[in-house]
Length: 94
Figure 1 (cartoon, rainbow, N blue to C red):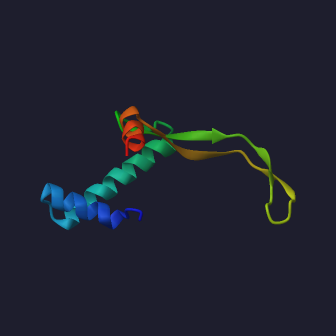
Figure 2 (cartoon, rainbow, N blue to C red):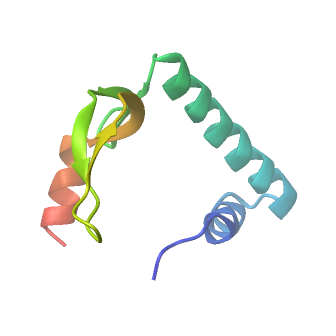
């Protein structure tokens, strides 16, 4: 089961002995600043965990899986996460 934002807020609140409202605000500020950094092109790097970046995707020809019809997909920017070494190792070691 996926962890939701409310679960994350609860864990931070319990572990840091903070009121839930302060934990919620902290998470919201972190996510907002993370988004601002990605959108601006700066990105965010958290050593050992990974980096969040904005990546350019070239235009291409896509195929509608239902109809098989080819269509032009415009170029765009997409958010990208590159996991750090410690996170990769943790995932691989279970």
